[in-house]
Length: 215
Image 1 (cartoon, one colour):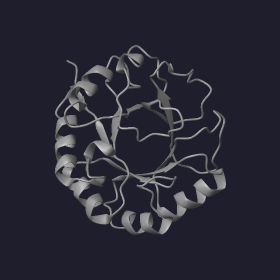
Image 2 (cartoon, one colour; image 1 turned 60 degrees about the horizontal axis):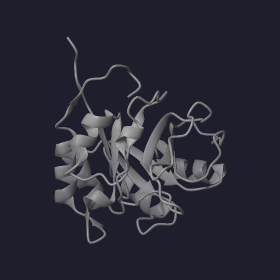
Image 3 (tube, helix red, strand yellow; image 1 turned 90 degrees about the vertical axis):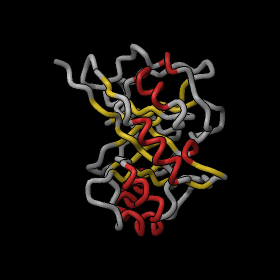
Image 4 (tube, helix red, strand yellow; image 1 turned 135 degrees about the vertical axis):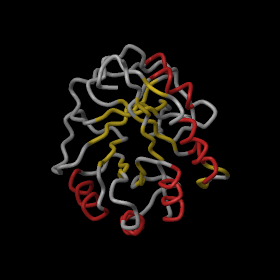
């Protein structure tokens, strides 16, 4: 008898402790902190203030764009991160001298196919919507069929325009290991606790039955 699993949820772009704790209470598995140019950017000091208040088993991911490996490693150690996410133009063999999982964000759609994954140093792959000049946060959905049938060698994280209204369909269609949301749980550019609660409830309301263990 097959046993279904529940998708993990990452709430990205956290900027304050109250929202972080509310997201955790709502069932978020992972919180994301942006250290790249963005209206959601936090300083290492701000992120550390938040991460120190989190329960021990909540994931804390730092989001970086074209940062030097030494900078990534220093911020990860200072903030107590549990993983780092690379969202820029870092080469496939980009290496950080830290004993933490590395999530590689890849942008697809708009005629841009999924790249060959075998050459990347990564512990997970996050797929987001491609828009020229943007490193994520577009709020736009890409064609999920791009990922269907893909031989993804590592856990697959789905991002790109997800909301409470479409995340159930996304989970059923792609069967990801995790989903990642930021703008889809905001109102007026700020995190909305009600939207966070609704998104998590919808995402985790679907049982996933895998054909293999990588998704």
